[in-house]
Amino acid sequence: MKKINIGRHIVILILIVLWGIMFILNDSFRTGANLGSILREASSTGVAALGMTFIIIMGDFDLSIGSMLALIGMIMAGSMDSMGLIPALVFGCGAGLICGLVNGIIISYFHVPAFITTLGTYYSFRALAYIFNNANTIICTESAFLKMGTGSAAGIPIPFLVFLVLAAAGGVVLNRTTYGRNVRALGNSEKACQISGIDTRKVRCIAFVLMGFCTAVSAVIVTARQACASPDVAANFHFDAITMVVLGGTKMTGGEGSILNTVIAAILYASVSNCLNLYHVDAQWQRVCMGLILLAAFSFDFIQKTVGRTRKNVQKKAAESM
Image (cartoon, rainbow, N blue to C red; front, side, top):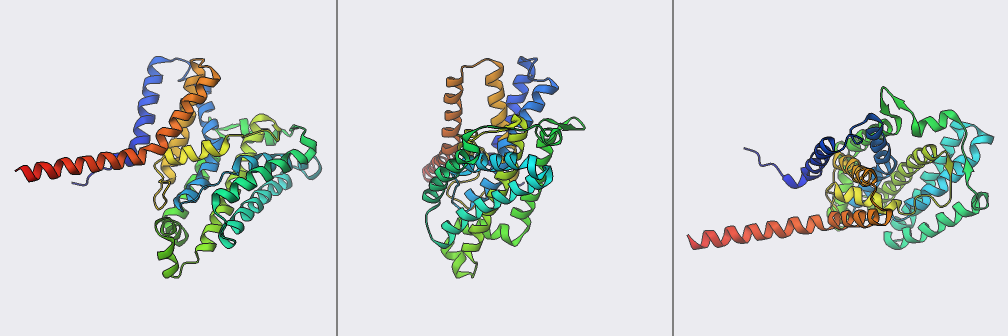
């Protein structure tokens, strides 16, 4: 009989338990409007978390995505009146690809560590967002654009449908393509990849370009939901995305991760935030709770390994005493 790895499915179990408890205890939680709000919130950051999954599987991370989102939102909203909706969306996605490419080239070809590179672009992209339109918020009035953040199709929020489509595509790329296998291999051992003839610089660079695209899509969702673009938006966006990915079981050391678990973790993360709001928890205490979730997510792999070693030691001592 095949042994089930509970660790890989723990995020699903936690989500089921949380939703089960809230469905019983809180009437407001189970309303269609509230569940739709959870899915929209999960999608806003979850789309970026899909790109972050590839980055973390490689053993890297991207601190610049919140500032990147602010810059893309300003560019997109600022060009919408003059260029029209579709060209503005294309322009925004193009800006995301360029931002990701800048990170990828510096990290991959100039061998600057991801932490240093993305910390630098974190400040640079945010500064450019403030410079654009002289740090003034840009109001969005295009109805078709606003529906991308607030509309629904067959009762399902449009942002969540976009999230699912991109997650399905990301799952195929990660699990069914040579590139996905190379990403995992790079996370396990860069030296082994180089010996095998894999162009590690290209693999890493492409991952950051994908990160830029996913951030651009998140920028569309966030800007459409808020009906405006602001240079102050998404200050903690990178922490939320990284937390979702790690909460989904992707190892910070690289080599292992799941797009499906990232999706579930995004819904769980948004659900916890929603529960805190329903019970009117003070904003500062909400930050404490989210900080504890971040700490738990980063500690889970260590806890799992510690429990595994303890179990092996107990079994070994039991065998020796027989």
